[in-house]
Image (spheres, rainbow, N blue to C red):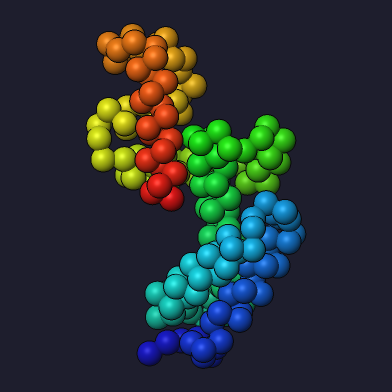
Length: 171
């Protein structure tokens, strides 16, 4: 039995309020309306999945939902920034804006980065693709990657192209 007084039919309304509020305060213009709808859906699913664990003695329902929304939005923002890094689709100003929005705490950034890396690596089936992605995440030059993989520099560019394509299709 759920400990929430909010009825399941109202989860989406409350989730939308929390997500839109957090996005407008911290990520204005960063997410598309489709992205925001996806975030709301994710929050609804997390509310549903965690409804048994909510403890009204530890805080208010909306505070609990707000925290879920905040975490979902931050995770999505970090993932979007890193997907853009991999795909090359985001301009430098957007990357800088994203870095400043994620927070100043290095520990938080490191945790988000590690989670993002795990997510991206998990999307790649081939071990070589995983290695290429790790090289890219370490800002390794194509020449160094070619040397480590014992392939030509042009083969590195093709491998990077295919990794980006696979990650774009998996997103």
